[in-house]
Figure 1 (cartoon, rainbow, N blue to C red):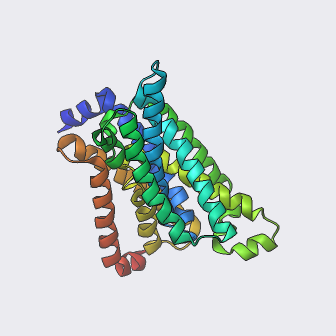
Figure 2 (cartoon, rainbow, N blue to C red):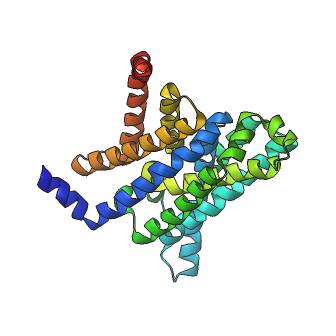
Length: 283
């Protein structure tokens, strides 16, 4: 068994995957804590669908220019599409022209349809999208690791560095406005950072399951935590553990790492919910 774990750690693609898994496990629950507090749990799911259009657009541009690999532009394309989508939905919600759930629905349907359509125009097939739909840690390159590290650093910096202001906004927007906080800017910032988080976690669990990695660890933490900071801390630890668990299981067994992470997260939530009285009594 020890030899197998040593082999796991010494394999280059597993080293890359472990780094990405840890970075995503830390960063995703941080912004997820704010989304849960603002009751925007499905925002990550909507942005994830928009990411698919960005991935396909990256492929299209790569095939058009010809001197770069099409898949090398997939993540940058996803980042741009996700940020634009997040800003647009905030603008729509703020102006009140469309309700939040309708705006999210537009992101859901438009993102999937746009991704499939553009991928077809790029000369690819829906099979090329599978790694982004459901996650593919085994295909992570060093360039993906660098991009993930940069995005994760930015997400953690904003989520932790602006914690007092963002908590005030998420807890009571009217109080935050009365306190002189730049509510519009902070609201847009949360949406943009959520978009970056989705782009970062896309390689781990895929765009269809990315919202679960942002939300479920937070839901687990809320069952046993006593404060907002504690919720974020527990959720971050849970995120890292779940990502590593899914990665290790997918190494030894022919299963999807993303699906394993999400199923494990839901199982942990169920167990914590069942034994919550005991856990709280011990604490």
